Amino acid sequence: MPPSNINRAHLTRWIKDHRASFESELRELVEIPSISMDPSRKGDIRRCADAAAALIRAAGGTAEILETVANPIVQGAFLRDPSFPTVTIYNHMDVQPADEPTWKQDPFRMSNVDGTYGGRGTTDDKGPALTAFYAARYAVEQNIPVNIRFLWELEEEIGSPSFEGCLKANAGKLTTNSVVVSDTVWIARGKPAVSTGLRGMVTALLSLETGTEDRHSGLVGGLARNPLAELAEVIAGCVDARSGKVLIEGFYKNVQKPKKSELDGFLASGFRTSQFQKVHGFKSLRTRDHKAGAAAIWALPTFEVHGITGGYQGPGVKSVVPPRGEVKISMRLVPNQTPQEALKLLTRHVKKLNKDVVVKGQHGLLPYRGPSDGPLADAAVESLRFAFGKKPAFVREGGSIGAVVTMEQVLKCPIMFIGLSLPEHGYHAPNENYDWGQASGGMVAFTRYFELLSQKS
Ligand code: BES
Ligand code: MN
Ligand code: MN
Image (cartoon, rainbow, N blue to C red):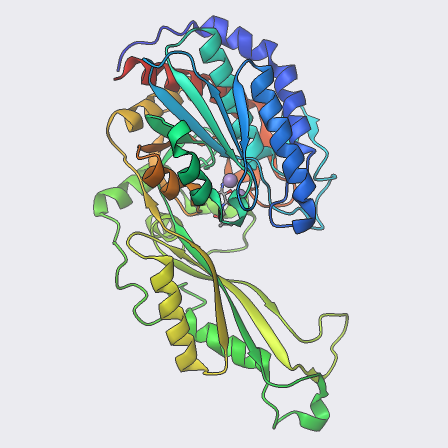
């Protein structure tokens, strides 16, 4: 590893001096409710793209809004010299809805309590985006010989439906030697992690209609079919709820079993089920075994039930037999599963269990496997060690980022992950937050990463 020429004291000073502007720019972004799932927020998506592009321009970079059939993508750059290597930083600027009743604040006002930033999108993914952006600004100011591009997507949280088309149409002007994605989580505060994989995903709606309207269960109950009970039976036929084992025929056929060395690495990473349980507020878990727990969230597929609708939802019990019900499910996928195959197997299995259930598959994302050795992985490890004083572990992520596989295929370059979020930051959860410790450390890490990339090739 070549030694660093970064003047640590100067960088630390610069970061301190820019804290106020970082916080006000994060506030500006967080206070735009760029909820990609909500069609009524189209205007906010546009405003967020404009605000993000303006930030890059104000820092002396170039920025352009690439139109897609759905949400725009912000493409920005600090292009300095064609002979320098180019790195592209990927983040997303869209957010999840924030309708959870336990928010202690307006989710679209950013709170700042001693450097803890509260609000939807603070950690997923506006805070990390801005952190990497500030490091890029510093690297440019210090003449680190690297070109830096930004790809800021606004439809990640809905599976990036138009990202591929847009990337293909614009690939010519997005040339890069590598991509670094900052949209992943650490094991715990003080326990940095570099991700080497993402799970894929496919979602589906299972619906069943057995009548036309509610009927009095005293009148019809016993003879009428109950769609919710039948759907519950179908769910039970798809997943063993206690162990999480998926019961769909053929589901595990292509699953690539994690190597023993990787499982050992999961344990060595410091992942502990007890800490996981505590930080997420669970009453208990499916297993207390650390290795099995890590494998379950990172390296094995899932069948998850997200919602069951139908029937009476108001106070008390209304004794009707409902005419229809719907179940919202997803399957997280691992190498070498594909969303198409998983959906096919699900449909066949459900039809066998209950021929009247209609399966409607939605978008799918392929799982991703990235490198854990080679120059980029080494650079990511060294950057986090340099910034946080602790060597990161290689883990995988249980989540999905639709753009990753697409970027690898279309930009034809390796993808690395330097995430900064912590479990307690609460991805998608009420009271989502991010903090100055991760942001300021992250600026150091990204600066070092840019330096290392500039010294290679
Ligand atoms: N940042 C997450 C991905 C992630 C989740 C990384 C958990 C590491 C751990 C991303 O914003 C996300 O939430 N992705 C969605 C995509 C889906 C809606 C298509 C996901 O994983 O559910
Ligand atoms: Mn994210
Ligand atoms: Mn997310």
